[in-house]
Each structure stands twice: as C-alpha cells, then as structure tokens.
Length: 279
Ligand SMILES: C[S@@+](CC[C@H](N)C(=O)[O-])C[C@H]1O[C@@H](n2cnc3c(N)ncnc32)[C@H](O)[C@@H]1O
Image 1 (cartoon, rainbow, N blue to C red):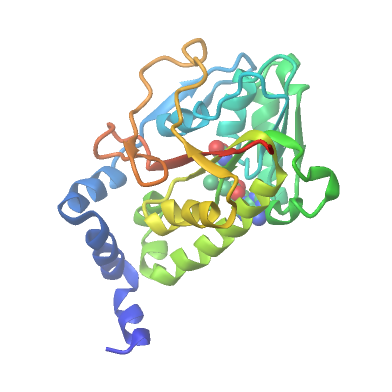
Image 2: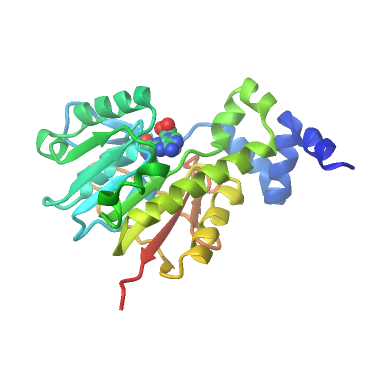
C-alpha cells in the first residue's frame, strides 16, 4: 500500500484507535476508557483570592522541577497558568519567575489566573510576557539566563481529542509529526536559555512517545552536556492541596502519569534534564 493511502486509512476515529492500540497493545482499551472518564482534578490553594483547579498529574509534574536555590525561573508555555501557580508557590523567597505565553488571548487568561490565585507578595515576583518561546533564545540577554526552566509544550492532548468528535474525525498521525517538530524548536530554544548547572523540565500531556521520549532523545544526541536525571518530588505542596499526588511510570527518558493506573490523573509525561557545568 502506498504511504499516502496508509496515512489516509489511519486517519479519523478508527485511525486514532489503531495508532494507539499499536503502541499500548492490550492496555489501550482500559487507557482509552480512563481518558474518556473523569480527570483527577485537585484544588490548589496558593493563598490568593481564589483556588486553582488542575489535574493532580500536573502538580506532580510541576513539583519535579527542583526549585531550592533557584533564582531565575522561566515557564515557557504557561497559559492558562496551573503549573506557574504551583512553581510560584514553591519557589524560594528570593526567586523570580518569568511566565511566557505566545497567544495574547491565553496570556490574558494567565494574567487573570495569577492575579486571582497568587497572594500579592508572590504575584509581585511573577512577570508575564507574550513571546514565541522558540525564538526567545535568539535574544542575547536570554542566553544561559535561567537556572530553572519548565517547558510544558503544546501537544496532541489525546484526552481532548477523544472528548470532541470534530477533533477525533480530523485526527491524523501527521499531526503528531508536526507537533514533534514544534516541540523540538521549543526544547532546543529552552536548552540554550538554560544556565550551566541548571535544570530543565520538559513535559506534555501527550500519549505518543514521538512527542515525549522522541523529542528528549533528540536533545541528548545534539547537546553532549545534557544529562537526564531522575526527578524527585522536590517541593512539599501539602500546605496548598490535600490528597496524594499520583505515581509516574518510567519511560526511556522520563516518567509518565497514566490515567488507567492513577485514578484518572494525567496523561502527563515529564523528563528532567540537567546541563553540566563547564570544566
Ligand atoms: C500545554 S499548554 C500549557 C499549560 C500550562 N503550562 C498550565 O499548566 O496551565 C501549552 C501552551 O503553549 C502555548 N504555546 C504554543 N506554542 C507556543 C510558543 N511557540 N511559544 C510560547 N507558547 C506557546 C499554547 O498557546 C498553550 O497555551
């Protein structure tokens, strides 16, 4: 069969199903069921006027960025703001956070989230900007400027695809390839902005390995000073939310919270990358 026909055959709801069944095998039916069910939303109370509700897998991911000792933190794709709120709540008193979002409409939402959920003393240390993250590394002043970076990249978000018949009907594996290219531009830009001795957390809510391990493996091949390190739960969030955070399964380069095994939490992939200091 010609490549074009094979891709066409793989498109839409049937294509989506066979694509992920090939990756997850017998696990797929349970995983698909869990993705179509309730997410595990947690209330995160940062001490502002309103709490923020987010997937417990997102909290698990954000607390995997080691914040102790960090001074300049970047959240590169930050709207609507869940992980920014977790990071801002956990960062050291002397630290500042730059939260970036490319879309002006979504940036406005990010501003509203921070204004309503963060207490004033924390909010004053969060700056919000509206730039293309893939191009941020081109500014001289950003080169090696951040000692911690979260890149929560735009991704396939299969939970949302499954929830919307229009998206499901339009699904095609070429979308994964297009997203992986965009994710690579963002990740390589993030790495250039990371200071030696700094940590970069790459995350997505995608199931497809091409958008997860695939993008991280490319980074490790391209930059010899990049090292994958096991992410610990680095911040105690028990003062902000109640309930246990979900566990994550090991993948080749990171960890994956999967909803069939974690009471609906996730999907959330994350990988922690350390930039070696120069000799
Ligand atoms: C997965 S969402 C981020 C969710 C957010 N971290 C949170 O926890 O609430 C990805 C975001 O990246 C934004 N985005 C997409 N391409 C971007 C780019 N090139 N530069 C900056 N932001 C981008 C999207 O508009 C979207 O808001």
